[in-house]
Length: 493
Image 1 (cartoon, rainbow, N blue to C red):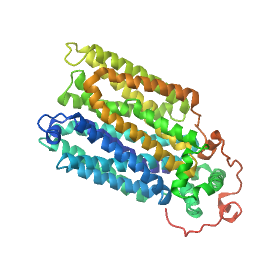
Image 2: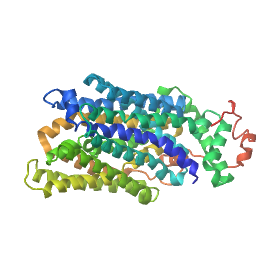
Image 3: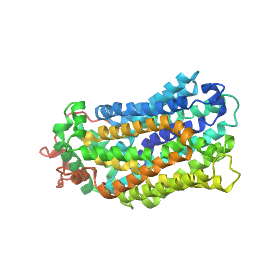
């Protein structure tokens, strides 16, 4: 595997960092009394309004997926990622300069719009430039960057507590901007997806991109890769040239509904694992076991480290070594156990308890939960959905899956503050049940995709797949019966 692929993937994976910071920063922001006083008034309490600030971000994500499904196919994955970075920058600027709660909600919504686009198109792009044998690791770089972004957000929030006045939360919110700007600038230095170029019949550019990405693998591999991508897209040609809405409707056809349902289920279960609830409302959970103020913010910073540690474990020991299905069902069972322990500890040692050991144990198991989620899910929930769909449905299918994830996140954002206030530790039971159900589905019904090309994965679902390849990459343009001449002038990538 060449260094160029890793560099390209890391540039695009900055999108994961942007999402990690954007989603993580609100957890610490809600821990600042200056923010709550400014936005919520003298009482500093308004569960419904807090839920709105969190959920409008997820609403923006949901709408961003619809933009991406069209834009990534029409204007390319590359420039869609660039646009997402610009939109995220605008949203962050509105948040950091918010004069009232309405402006804050608008900023969160626009940032969510950009992150919804990022979550849809970044894993698709990385999957399309990755070799089959290393795709789990390379797409997993996005998960690593999400963890680093979340870790960074927690420590930015902690550092903000040492400022005075509104700077405590305005400066941390402004720290969403640098990553988004870097993402947009980086898009000028990466190639188009070779699959997108072939679909647009820009064959010369596609050939150059494949040479840059896979030049170390030899001409036979390059020839076979080009031929398989081209011929598979030709098989899908009729569907791929239909109107956007008609093509998107294919997601619900008998032929593709299983893939659609699987992708949506995986990302929805990523939310229903409890990870986002713990992330956004961790200061509330810490308060429930007796930790508040700067101590809670410090705990949030340490919590972020666990995600990075877990992601490193995934890249070293799990990615492309464990089957996808085993990773997901073992992970679901692990989270089920961790949440059960946290529920028992929270019930036994509520806020105000005289015991020190109990609350500390509860925090420790939340940390272990965070590490486990990063090992088993932080990357895998993006790897598998990005592999399932044929080219003409890939961005649309992943977009629908991210939309489903966002809808679940919106519901959880609205009900969590109220649930914590009214049922307390019993709220954990929801996530125990959902993780157990997810483990059952992954074990018995999820097909294994590890090590297969994106085109070969279609065979698992009964699609016709090109398996015979011929020709040398230097002669591809001469084989007119296999690969037509490009209709476009060659441009530099």
